[in-house]
Image (cartoon, rainbow, N blue to C red; front, side, top):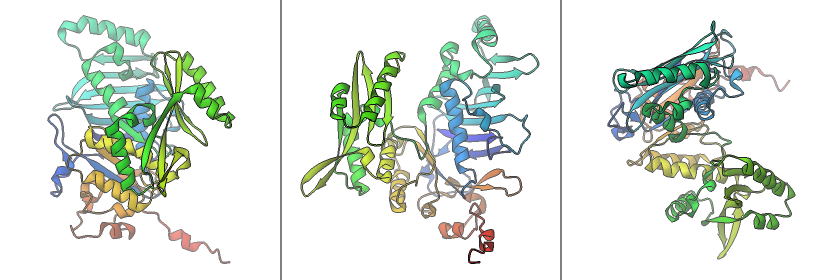
Length: 450
């Protein structure tokens, strides 16, 4: 579970800024919105973030995704140089830190970087008093990284040798120590790595669901629950079908789309040269959404189709033939089911993109009011209709506002205003009571009629 995000000098977050999922002591309602954990702090199940365009909502999501991306690829990404706040000292490093809880522990993990170098990296256990698991610091004068690992006395010699190898050979300046978890073989490092790479799920407006890669839609329970969800959202879809066939047969039937077949051939060549673990790839063409997978020397094409029933006849539609809103719902289907049954943390930027406000409200309300919800849902939106005390607690509603002088984003919650329980939050927000809305005074000065 996510506890907090702290970022500094990342894009619009020029100064150290914190977003957290910690429940406020001022809020008494909906105590079941708090996940009480056996180990670590209790955290809120949901959070919604509001703000004007360019206020910094998406920047917060990007900071979290950047940290995850770096852990997954094992180092700084190619576009790292665009991360720093342009109004700050150019020598100041970017810093991103997250605190999160796993089943067995709670961790604080962070990275500070500049000039294609990881300046600092740290991992602490924060269950009670912070306990260092590792720290690494870059020495600009020597051009080397200093690493400190916590080791048991019986493993002290072995630990020193491993640190020496990492400092001298194994760890490059732009690589992350956490991503060397297979070398370090430390249960805490592995535990933290697994949560960041697997249980944290970030969804952007352009993110396409990869659930067709696996066998979820061939699972009767998943398929049935998905169909019920789609039917409840009134999308006109009566059933889902999983089409899985030999790639050569698929190419023959798709002969009228030569560009698609060329893409398939290109991906087959890529998969044939890929390491053993890389057996799948995704094609998102103008007509089809297809996954390709390799099993030994054979290749298969897989896609999910939606069935529409009209006058007792069924018609198959490719996902690409559905509306943007319906495709967006398909992106959310695995999330809706996982967040109910697993301790995953889903972070969604612009949950309302391409979706009708009524549909968004129904979807969010269904998730938030489920008392058996196991995971977390955090999202940004412009849909003020969700500003409802019957859905969210005051400490679950966040605002992002950019200072006009410094262009820095700061974050705050509705709870800081201590509103009355009978207050119309949506009306108050749109009237500017809580800030975080566009400042449109200069719009009236535009004399378009002249």
